Length: 100
Image 1 (cartoon, one colour):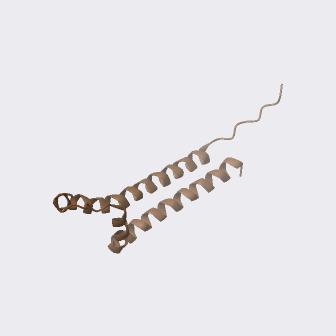
Image 2: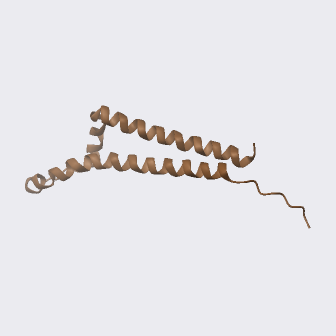
Image 3: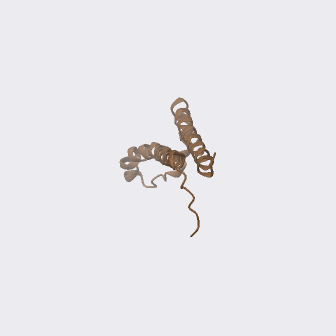
């Protein structure tokens, strides 16, 4: 087993671990919606009453967009790490040339 294969397996394993964590987190959010409630603290509430009534639906949507965005970023990064691990595993050893 050469150096590229070891690093490739390690990178692949880290990427798969990140993907499992992402899907597990998404599953937990779907089965326990109360997990999303702390994200409502990230969205500021409007102080005026007139504008607050107009913006309230947008704020409710933003509370769901934040965790969805974070999960999509984590999934994308995990997928890219897995892809890089596969590239390392498929890399061929360069033949050693004798010094001239």
